[in-house]
Length: 326
Image (tube, rainbow, N blue to C red; front, top):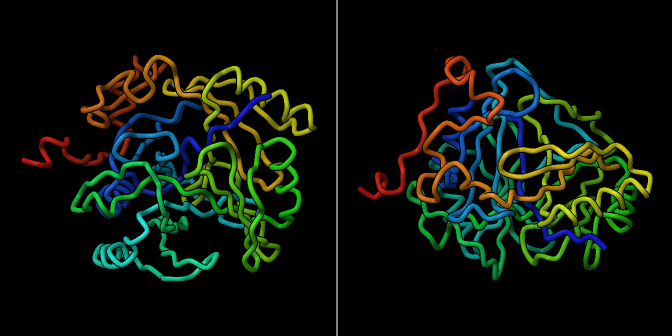
């Protein structure tokens, strides 16, 4: 039987590239680990990667900045909508001050009997910081964020859905949900896979909003990726999903750093079954120390390097670690 380790990464369609870097690196202090391009289609669009200190699976956020292409999405129901970030349990006061200092509007609330902070990406995508006990993932102490407060990685994803029961059914039948379903008002939560952290799914019952867009467009989620660890697991889970009648599923796609299969869930959220490349993952084209310092292209686009780079929005990337410490 196939198994899921936990989450792998989350990918968002955002607005401007520079404001995205400023938000994730400048405000949140995340590590910039990769600058490449969208592999699908022929339109040059950045694909930017941010992570914790080690670039762990379950700690990577990636973005497609669509403002330059003029594509705008619509947030709504039947759509992944909330980025849930895991932070140290005693860090929320620090983060509330820091976000406010960076002119990010932040609200303190209580969900599942625990405080969390709500705020938004400049393009409007909803974020929450969730305090987590015992998360072993090491945060990146960048841009003035001290190690003891740095973001561990992904806590999970919030999905707005008109009929939560169908998504619970999908998760229980074929997507390896674990533990007891817990509820808080219109929100229900469970975990996916074997990991203890970084794999929470929160379903928000939402029949009031219109259907959100599923195509590329600034201001919306694109997909949530789950860590299948091996291609054998990936094949087995794909077979299991199709065998249960969920046939809106893709063929295998090679993304250079990982190999992927995509399935549209009953909640509308696009799930990716990801397996990190055996030939190095993030470090196949840059050393661990150099991550994010050079513009990377897949082989099929390398002959267009100058043309592609000239069409992309110029961005100022963060200094390398040794430069930042100098």
